[in-house]
Figure (cartoon, rainbow, N blue to C red):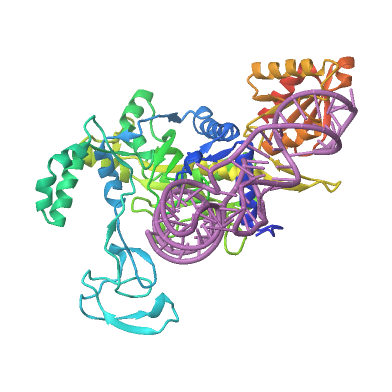
Length: 504
RNA sequence: GCGGGUGUAGCUCAGUGGUAGAGCGUCAGCUUCCCAAGCUGAAAGUCGAGGGUUCGACCCCCUUCACCCGCUCCA
């Protein structure tokens, strides 16, 4: 990797501090001490995120004739999650090793005969002394150190559960608490499960299932035939075991997913297509190629439904032990085969198939899915844009070099000084930009240098300044963020000038 | 959830068992014809939260919350 003058953690701390200072990202409910894994986007953050989503939608839906949009409900029929496998797969019993503190999945642990002799490593170290012990009753040992001193199995429901309907299931539990008390543990758990299940619904852990269950609705109403896609942007929810790194892993997050339905046999070609397409999307929005890579999943990494999967990864400046930063996922491109449509056909009894009238063939389409994280992309664009720059004169400035289309504020307008009618003129230019739909900012306070630097920290690509010459020949200066150079442009052509810049 | 670290002004950080500090930033005024300039003034803090010890706690003890690192999971 490229050598870094400062270590990654320091950079990340500066970014977090700038996010707070300038209004990109705040911790949720901060005045109450914050809430784990929850963040709010401030005035600049929401503009950036909206632009990211807008660019995605443009590239996926508005510039193509083979993909249409969808916005489906976050709460869906619970059978959806039975069919998708989330209801079972999201409830893995986890166990902690009391010796080496390893946490592991009970169903993946090495099996042993209860009561038999086992050998384990002292303290969980590979070079630890070999010790002998007795296998525990649960029938498995710690996969790390081989020890048998384990915590109870604990169930982690990784989907957020709530109840649909006005009556709280706690009422029913409360009514039956005397009966429940008479049951043994397993029976009680089962009985409680039944009560909860009556009204249980889940916040979706991915938007994808909405596209699958609406496959027929959309295919028929839009008169599309494979290959075609359905795109959706929306919130999803997962009880992540370890959230962290600002908005990188949160329990509430926004996805930008597209399910592309193709004829079986064409799937590998389309997989390659989207592979390339999605990588280039980030590059075209100015992300540095050196900080991006495609990583194919190894065979054992693949989800049960996927035939192939590759991640678009970004080199985030998160704090790490070596201070270098770390590759983290931005987006996954997966070949989900016909798994999802088949499952929903099976569970719903509705045939989710496509009949090709020309060839008289009926088939269940394969699905290629580029699934991106809107918050992750936003964070990556933010990290990628961040720079502490030392200028030729030795001064330092902090600048966010956003692609102009992603920049929260497109242009700032200043009077050079607060007199001679300059503020009135700059105000007029500012209004004309707003009228033209260009998100602009007007600032008259303090010295102009300070205003330029403030806009550098906000990532504003252009600053327009009204000066003494404006009154003489009607021109203003346009100062470019990255080069800090200025050109003179006629004030009445400024809207068009910027619009052209923003289109490129 | 477990182990390690952290928490004082918007940001970065000092601080002492005896009534809370600095720099930067912010705001107002003056000045200023191009890159965080200068002068004057101002606002701003539940010292993460709750309890305990103490005559007295930001400081000592306990609990808790949040963040960062490691283990595990994922977009």
